[in-house]
Amino acid sequence: MFSFMLPWVFLVLPLPALIYWLMPPLARPEAALRVPYYRQLQNMQQAPGTVIQGRVPLILLVLIWVLSVSAAARPVWLGEPQPLAASGRDLVLAVDVSGSMETEDMVLNNTSLNRLQGIKIVMDGFISRRPQDRLGLILFGSNAYIQAPLTFDHDTLGQFLKDAQIGFAGPETAIGDAIALGIKRLADRPQQSRVMVLLTDGANTAGAIDPLEAARVAAEQGVKIYTLGFGADEMIVRSFFGNRKVNPSADLDETTLQTIADSTGGRYFRARNIEELTGIYALLDELEPSAQDAQQVRPRQALFFWPAGLALLLSIGWAMGVIFRRRAAATNGEVPHAG
Image (cartoon, rainbow, N blue to C red):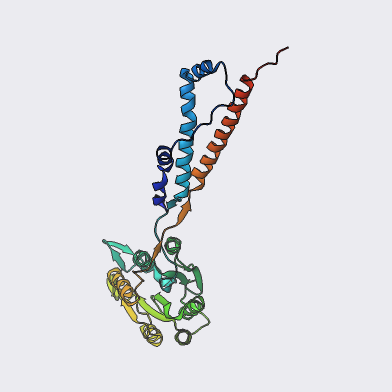
């Protein structure tokens, strides 16, 4: 949006006209040289073309004045409002992308989805609701990797999550390594804002760090961990012998997830479908609210140099015109010496 930082400066626009109308005219000194053909010169000045030529410098001077005042009013282009960077929390999202996340026990609009697809849909809304927070993304399977460091660039982080594929980090589940990596990323952030949300559908089956040991270190470092166990309790499996019910979440280690959350001051949640997962992330918004009254800033791009530069160019052109006219007048007014 185009705007002026000092719009009151435009109050001086009529100043030259006021000075012209209010100041008394200067007294003209009596001519020191009487020109015998003065009347002929006066008639030449009143020629039709001369009137137009006299108006051009006046219009030019008015334009230069308007441009100069416009530059003094500091024109700027205001960008879209942006939240100030230091107003929210530092929150790391750790998402399980192990082989078990391929289980298709989620249903949305009568469409079967695997667990990772359901997570992507729900977390996209969660990310968009936290513009004041610095978010990071960890993907873990047999190993844990930083997919996006703590950042306010939520669009890029969301795209990284959408691009995540099952098996990216291996088929197993390294919960302890994911927690340790999250602690490392949060270690240099203010202690009161260190939060981690860990989502998994299984138990710790890989990695070099025990999950409970990692949770103990997290508690010492002031990192609060919310754990989410994800996956349906029952699922219909079709086979040659008919349909049968199975528990696709039989490997989910709820005891360890509960202990991790309790020891760090967080909470454990159980989500059996997309609706429950959506409700849990809405509850997380309440438990760890993003700052809603944070100040915003609008990027400014200064534009004063455009009117100032144009005024300078016109001033140079006007000055050159004056010089040329004086030289032309001096040349036309030369009187040859008598022989």
